[in-house]
Image (cartoon, rainbow over all chains, first blue to last red; front, top):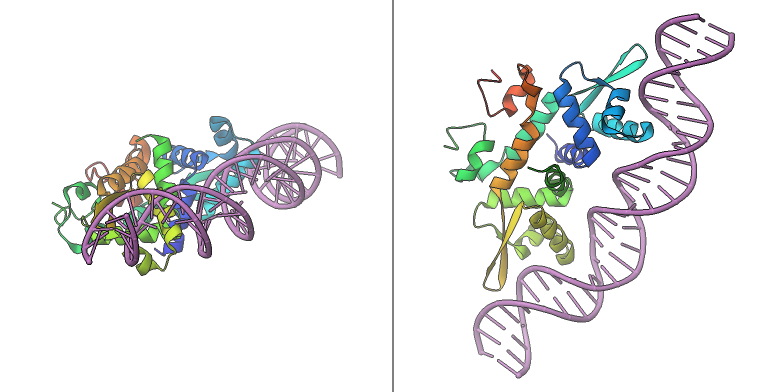
Length: 112
Length: 112
DNA sequence: TCATCATTTCCATGATTATCGAAACATGGA
DNA sequence: TCCATGTTTCGATAATCATGGAAATGATGA
């Protein structure tokens, strides 16, 4: 993943309301939640919520889907995993991993 | 990890220069790098670098250590892992995981 | 102590971001 | 078509952030 996109995704999550929105979407799973429901759950003004949802969508962390009069938003798990993979990809820089590094490494053998 | 701290750490990484600094420190491993070397590697003004290093240190993602006239900074792998764990902790919200989720889950059995 | 080097703090500036009221834009039902 | 509802865009404002020059701080060796 490009560094610009990584920064964009980190920035998208680095805001209290957006992190809360994203977590809500993660818990909601594939069907997601209608914008209004999210606003209700987090007590956000419609314009404010819309601003943040757009930010998450632009970063590729959320997707919108129209259903009747409602617009459902859902988390993009693949994007989240890409982000995490990018953060950990140079984990320990080829050297034998520090103990603390183990939990984040996909390659358990390398990080044993 | 508290949500405020999670936001702080994400924000610390959500800036191109700071992400570059952090990656450099990750590659440098435990010994870390002197501030001057980092500035040199990334062509940053001393004041600018100092600002960003402070930001990373405040977020708990980097540590400073004095060595002679130099101050060495190193990445805190444990903090990075905490951050990732927080991002993935409600991964798939208890339901069977979506395929895309597997890579991020520590619990491979749950996310098979 | 003094000179020197490495780094940080102070300060001002410009840029970006978050918020929300009001208006506009869909969508679906009567 | 008209109305009601759900969501987004517009516009203004306040707050936060990034940058780097200049001065201050801290550490070392002479």
